[in-house]
Image (cartoon, rainbow, N blue to C red; front, side, top):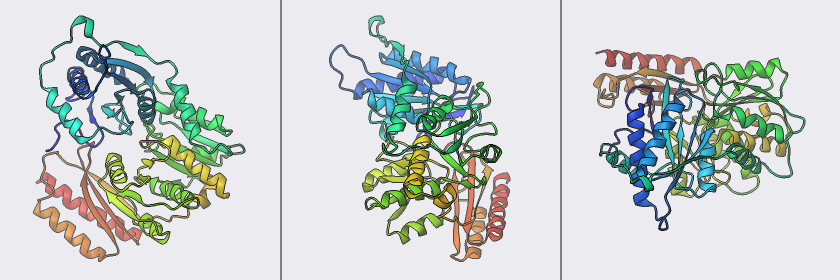
Amino acid sequence: MSRKYFGTDGVRGRVGATPITPDFVMRLGYAAGRVLIGESQMPAGERPQVLIGKDTRLSGYMLESALEAGFSAAGVDVILTGPLPTPAVAYLTRALRLQAGIVISASHNPYQDNGIKFFSAQGTKLPDEVERAIEAAIDQPIACAPADGLGRVRRIEDARGRYIEFCKSTFPNDLDLRGLKIVVDCAHGAAYHTAPSIFHELGAEVVSIGVQPNGLNINDGVGATAPRALAEAVIAHGADLGVALDGDADRVQMVDAEGNLYDGDQVLYAIVRSRARLAPVKGVAGTLMSNLALEHALAKMGVPFARAAVGDRYVLEMLNEKGWLYGGENSGHILALDRHTTGDGTIAALQTLAALRQNGGDLRSLLGGLVLYPQKLINVPISKDFPWRTDARIAAGLAAVEARMNGRGRVLLRASGTEPLLRVMVEGEDAGEVAAMAEQLAEVVRAAVCG
């Protein structure tokens, strides 16, 4: 059964258009509250409690108030954190033994977008069946709880400090970052007041960029989706390396002293290789977008690799099914389940730096060990209801490119789970051929979409 509102990462869209309106978000909060009350086994006289965090978008204030109203009407208590990374909300939900965590964020999207993400009491993404139950309740009338049964709202004042200490606890106690000069790019997002402190308190000299949010500049020319700013800052400041997070800090990209960029596949490989020196690694989960070089490199290490659908929730599902600990996406979502229950850009960077400290050398020698195959990704705007899977023109174009690649790479078409885009990806040994084939297929898709 398909979901009407929930995508691969919660409910997301343009602010002011359904579903990101005050009315809808209030009903979403109420529906989620009623589902939580039905599922929780609270002692008599106690109410379920949820944690609400957000990134730095101006619209977060409006949506936070709407969620508060919905949960309160359902009889659910609310704890507010203010701006806080998505993985911090997952951690605090679990640490405080709450019934759910909610994040108001559109992650790497521009400020005009926003979204609502949910975490379970265990600090993981909500199961599909719970999301379907919430969707089924959204269109039901709001029946406000009695006045003495309304949920209360309070703010937790030390959320930032708790999360900072948690992140530091994932770094080996016998190591530090002294002697390293690190540029930290927080994308004017939720990590602006956490990530620089974490690296500084572990001993690094920190240069911070992307730490002046104004509600409208999140992900604007900075952060993991615009890493050129980080590369330029690393070179300008003579830093040893750089770390770029996205707007809600659940993904990471890294840059070495020469300004070379390393993506999630390379970060994941470095973490797994470091862990494998200490104990056997049962397996690694990637996605359909993971670079073929990662799969080949892990095979040389004797580590099984499996591909999930795109989206960190699907990587997590695969890890749980197989009993594995490590997985991720080339976009920078990295899962290290021996450290956290969800993807965390800051913690992924810390694990990479721990590997650097343990193995010596510099970031280039550590992450450059995995040489990625050329990969070209083109996003083609497409309406949600366009039948691209069954379109004869697209099928013929796909077959032609696959025949041209002749087993020397991969071709992939997939719809974005968060935006009205069809992603056209070609990967292979020759960069020129890859780029030409990707553009050829993208042009076929554009022609089919335009009729």
